[in-house]
Image (cartoon, rainbow, N blue to C red; front, side, top):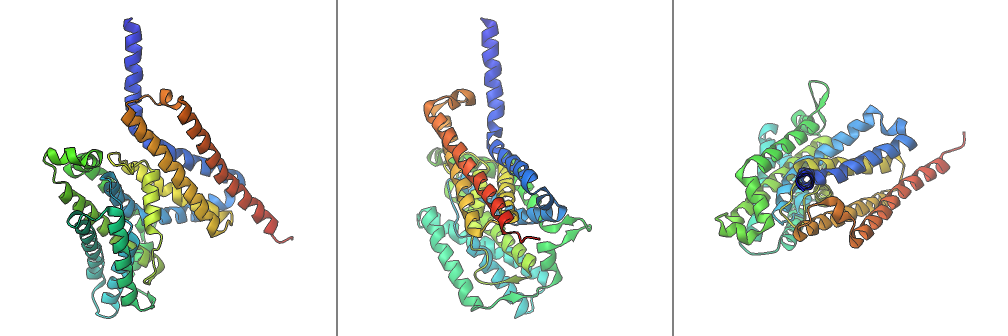
Length: 376
């Protein structure tokens, strides 16, 4: 009897130990699948150092925003305005440099502070005016984008000081890409905030049960505003990085930032229902989406098919983590027993079919690319 009880305790302990890492397993598995597929069909082009550098640089652009969005979504929030915040912050920074002669160092700081200001406005609209996050940030997205269009008047502002281009595409010590260093440092800082500070603990508490958090003395509205301020600051930083990368900026820049960042965070295991967050998962989600899009480009698949594949990945991820959230609510902590229920077997089959569809798209792209090659 004691042996059986000891065995059960061991399994329970193992399940509890595995559970915090479930969020990272999904994106990591898909990363290995994409890498394995590309190793078969396009190893020379996909795994050359220059292409791997492109993947890292593309990922780095989204890392700061993914870090901040992790806190926003953990608190059951959403921010659809980050692309417009990035564009407007960069446009104002460009005008300060070009027309008013501001030093680049001051303009860089102001770009991040402007992003934080726009995030503060978002937070106040949501908490003080009680506008739902989805509607509030969508409306502010229109406002910020409108201001950017009014200021730029169709102009493309280009050729910035070296400091700006160094932030967007420079190298530290001649081998470390500056954007990657910035992105990784923001994620490390986000991990520290999430796991070692009251802000991280309160964010998870608010997402788990905002009413209970408020009853225990947590200033829910204030901490939600903090999350949106952080989100705005990181969007301003991303706008600065994008401007440095392209050495140019216009009012229509960063149109898909919000979808890409939200997708990366959700793919990484942060629950849209709140209360579940993974900073390492957000990093894996950003890397996964960049690898997938790069793979589709390498296979010469049209942009529209890239959108289809990205949408399928988002659906799979949201469905999977919705299931995980339901498992938590039902009190079933053992993954293997949960997988054997009829509903979850159906879900796994559907997930398998959708994954097969993605790789079928990749295979079609490879086939069409071969057919389109000129005969030699």
